[in-house]
Structures are given as structure tokens and as C-alpha cells.
Image 1: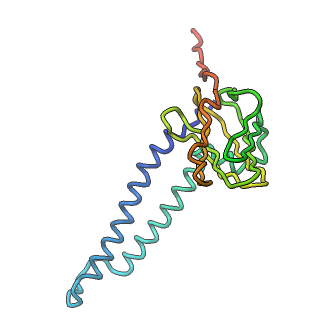
Image 2 (image 1 turned 120 degrees about the horizontal axis):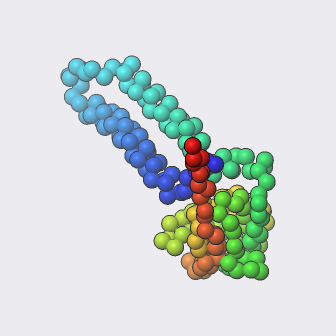
Image 3 (image 1 turned 90 degrees about the vertical axis):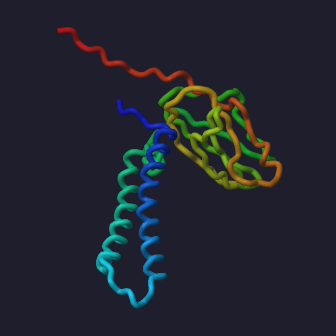
Length: 199
């Protein structure tokens, strides 16, 4: 069974990749600024228009390539694109009204580790945000909740523990207090250990 990456792991790797990519883009801007401010009498340079546009094309291809390659590495991108083909193990219905999350009758919402869960969040009045957060306030995932619309997100929890629900969208001053502590509990994750056959 393939190990599913957590948001912590993915964001840590992406920070490194995008930092390096940003430095290459900054170098392009820096070179352009240098050429613009250089006296017009000085025309000697090893960076010709051909080299400049080749470097620019390389940056564009690299940026597109990063997104294509990370499609296979970021599991929730595939879940979102293929959610119409994926049958969830559980569906959780949550309503939002008057700056309050209305959860199912049982609290906390108990989920199993590696279970495919579809959250269907509906709003009766305003546009809200639906975010699931760890206890250290790092975000697991979030989505915008548009009124009178079934806002759905498919998720597989790969880490156990208690999670809070908070609004991630500005919906007026009352939105600052839209938080439900320990709204979700994910049961412990047990890894399957392959036993070696004794010869």
C-alpha cells in the first residue's frame, strides 16, 4: 500500500522547490534591471536576446513541469480531479448558519485513518470558509463555502488525533469566533508490517 503524504511533508518539500525556482526568476529580473540601468555606451554583454529568451522559456517550462510532476505527488489534487469517480467510505454533512457550524448529532465526528471521507458543507446565508486544523493550528485542508450550494471536498486522513474546525473566510466580525474545538477525531493509524518469511 502506497504511503500517502501529509500536508506537512508536501508543503515542506514544495517550500524548497519553489524557493529555488523563485531565486531563478529573481535572477532574471535582476539581470533585466542591470541591463536597463547600464549606460547605453556599454554594449558588451554575453547575454544576447537569444540567451535571454531561452532562459525565459526554460523558466516557463520548469514552472509547468513542477505542476505536472507534483500532480502525482500531491494526493488531494488527484482526489479533487477524480472525485466523481471515487466512492467515499463516509459522507459528513455540515451546515453553516448565523456564523455557527452545525455538526451532525454525534460530536466529535469519528473517522478512521485512511478512510475516504466526503465533507458536504452548506451555508444558508453567507459565504464562509471550512477549514480543518491540527492542535498546533496548522491547517490540514480548507475550502470556501458558498451559500445555497453543495460545497464538497474529498479527504483521506493519514494522521490520527483531534482536529478543530474553523472558518477560513471573512464573513464579518462574528466570523472571528467561528471555531469548534475537537470537532473531528481520527482513530489511530496502524501501519501494515510485512512479515519476512523464514527460510
